[in-house]
Length: 395
Image (cartoon, rainbow, N blue to C red):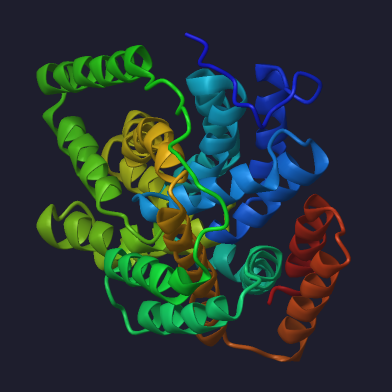
């Protein structure tokens, strides 16, 4: 069923479902850096295609930061939701994630045959420097685009520090929300606001998706209990993945290695290494886990399960979030949530940079990638260039 189109989208800029899919498929092929890709989704949807205005996209980022799941994947679904309803959300969501799934599945097959990810990881180590540049550039670009007040300069470092010390992302977001309201409370309200008419809740679509998921789980219960356990595990992990895909990895490690005993720690860490050098969120490691546990069917089921809850949250929460945004105090809190997202990007960039073994060629590559991003060179060419250099020099 086609959902109502938002007022922020005009008929002259509204894409077809095929155009939406192809645009996000192309973007997904270069989706390195996890949450850093939100900036490039904004470039696509707001600046190049003008599918959304900047205010609508800003609100979408705040929504995706608030609910559990991989932020970049959710942002792609949000854009599709605003331009084509639930069908658009599914189209952009699948398009964005498909390249990462295909590549991770291919690498998982090769790993199962050769039982070694070190050659691949070392060959493409230069891509890790690119990820550092991407996340750092995203923090700078997003911060300069949306954070304009002095209060933002207070909230961002606090949020970054809280993420750094390992405080629960839920608490960081809540603290940022409260700080946003408190620090901006004195600004007052220039005009009297009343709740805007929100989009209708997509009841039929949600019931259809939930019903289909329930039938699939029933089929797994009857046909393959291990696949059922795999699916339920990934569904549960996604529901608690506050703070983006990186928050899912410790939970996945604990459940897959220690609780279920499906693989050795080294095997799981090899899966993480493959997840870091492939596009898409790092939680795409679920594809690797699924393949090791149950082959291609396991890879498919694990991938769908790790993304389904967060997708449902986007399409169900968005209408209510939109209405809440009509209240000026809530919007002040949303500003704090956006600050927490910049803090997350900043702390992630530093953490990734510390984890690398830097040498002169790797530093030069990271600086060149950052400069290319600042100069707005097409991301596809940047990724291809870094990949070629990694293959040549084997960082």
